[in-house]
Length: 448
Ligand code: SAH
Ligand code: F3S
Image (cartoon, rainbow, N blue to C red):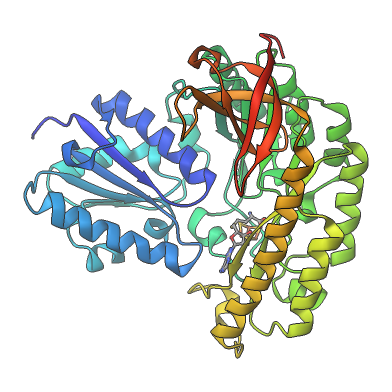
């Protein structure tokens, strides 16, 4: 067998996938000494971590794999190509029918088995494992390596909500939570390595219910309180939440834990009760508004963002108008909106859908214009204010500039020394353009 030296990892999809990719890099560094490279041409192992939430994301997978075959594997057959994530989970063996040059298929819950799967694939036997051995994944993974000032930690996996349009429960399995101490240990390891901010991750993160050492359980509100006890952690975020499990205890955490960032992403999907019911979201518009009302009371000035699906089967102009009205009533500062995409195997895929795609696109356009205006108004209100920023690293554009996020989760860039990376600083916001804030350093402090 040829020695493997370098790993190229490409990630599509959500933050859970970004987290999983980091753990993949950790596990293969430990088992095979693989070093990550950004250049696929010099890699011995090429892994694609995939997303199947919408059809477009899924199609991107096959075009990327085809390119890897054409550009690299065709010339170097010993190269290992692997596919992980939700497309792998959904397709399993079938993936190799469409892309026979793939050597390795693994699911979101089998990344800890990658070392053996990689050995098998190197022995020229295709290796496929997309099972759901649940908590085993975390028990078998090495502790994470330093990844900079802002760390991600997965606290629960999977989803048991079964919204009628969504593939996640099928691709990532049912919900299960990591024990409280495991999560706290992982956060502490990041803190020791210099992280100042942590984002607690889960597809349905507020369903977190982790076992405690005394045989009880801790919910997300309790977990946040405990993470806040770790001195070096100055800021805490969590994503993604579901409205039904958004408890009063969790809302109240915004009042009680100042380290909790002034931002909440709470997907609503639609502003029509009829459509919410068909989506099986389990709540009404009024219930949603009541929940965010409580959050705003606990943390005045908090920034709220959401996800919206346009053109769910049977959505009428009236339903859509209710969605536009909700965007105003809820006061969202940003919304990620998508045209509904029928996913094979989900209940909604069997519903009659007679809204023409031009109508759906036109609705999406109207929604996005409204959201863009709200987003612009939000950032304009920030001009002149001083915001706490965790300096994450060099700005994407502009020499001598650094970037970081304000508590409300917007990126700002400002002139600063590279040595400030990892510190909390105060930045005065002085200009905004479509998606960037520009500011200037007011003062830097070491402590939170
Ligand atoms: N756990 C999150 C959502 C994860 S998927 C929640 O509680 O809602 C991220 C977003 O993708 C969803 O919020 C939804 O807006 C969108 N999405 C999911 N399935 C979709 C589909 N079939 N078509 C279009 N958008 C979809
Ligand atoms: Fe999907 Fe609904 Fe879960 S959108 S991830 S099934 S909460």
